[in-house]
Length: 261
Image 1 (cartoon, helix red, strand yellow):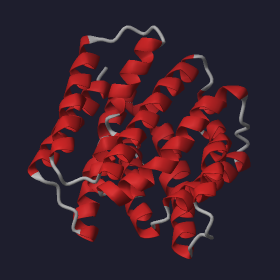
Image 2 (image 1 turned 30 degrees about the vertical axis):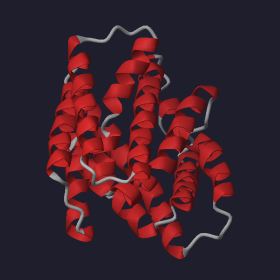
Image 3 (image 1 turned 90 degrees about the horizontal axis):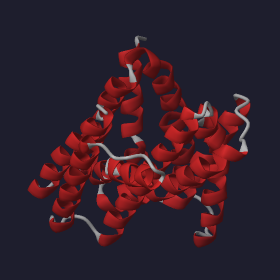
Image 4 (image 1 turned 90 degrees about the vertical axis):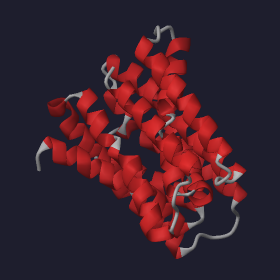
């Protein structure tokens, strides 16, 4: 499989996360089983968690917890596009760490702000779903910022597979809010996401990005929310309102602008 096809395959697999969450329903158990499966896979690959992996692991644990909730309560397409508000949070985090934002960053942030305002005014998203979607974008954006700094220091493993065991520090305690045992559907969804929503697409993307280039790879990967919206419409009848569709366009433009940097 060529590098472009590997990136597209990764985007396809990532786009199914909301579908699995919607079928599993119990998002806290889904997050736990996803963390556990990904952690076991990382340890099997001898990706030992170092101290530098703690922060990205905690951020990914937060993402694993809130993103399924967004898919369930906001809809699969809305959740995927709210996740892609990440460039806003990445730019703000890197600015706080002393990295001066570029003009392109400013354009991306403005587009994301406009998209969020459109989605908030659409009336088609529950408050819980909207908050969970924004939280997923926040966690993802902060994770990207932390991962970039680690990778720049030659610690890419700490930002990726090495971070997986630390996700359990978030997803396991969250189960205190869900004392009932998991359903078979939730366990199956979590295991699926651990393998096909985390480890496998990461390996596909990472194995191809050096050959394709980071900018082109990120643009190709932005197919993910488009496919997620398609699955929501096909399988669950979740069709965006006009303001939501306009927000999708703005967020895609912001993601492409961030990737081209």
